Length: 112
Image 1 (cartoon, one colour):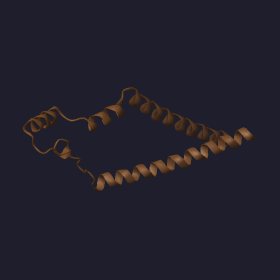
Image 2 (spheres, one colour; image 1 turned 90 degrees about the vertical axis):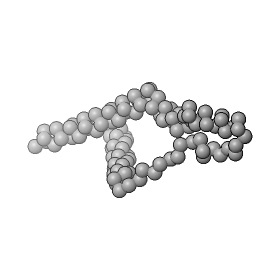
Image 3 (cartoon, helix red, strand yellow; image 1 turned 30 degrees about the horizontal axis):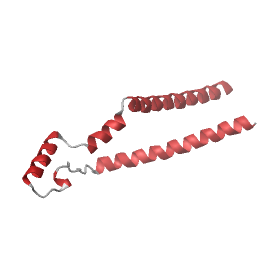
Image 4 (tube, one colour; image 1 turned 45 degrees about the horizontal axis):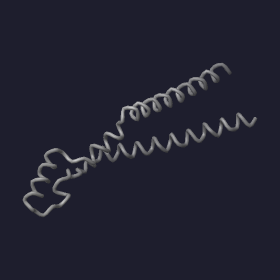
């Protein structure tokens, strides 16, 4: 009977370690490829057409507004994205609680 219980515990630990390894690898690869910097750069730069339009307007002496040259942010919120966000927040809460539990158990095991 103890063997089955011990086997289940080993499987749970393996799943947790594998999941953490996958998450770490994914985040590391995204950082190494510069995904975050790329997405920030993409949102902060003007397109070539907007630059040309800006330069033409300056030459013509027109009134210049930054909002005329920057792409408008489109709000894509809908029921699906809101439910996805709610699910994501739930997963975050569960993950935080699981990590807190794991580290408390490790701390107890080390102290004993």
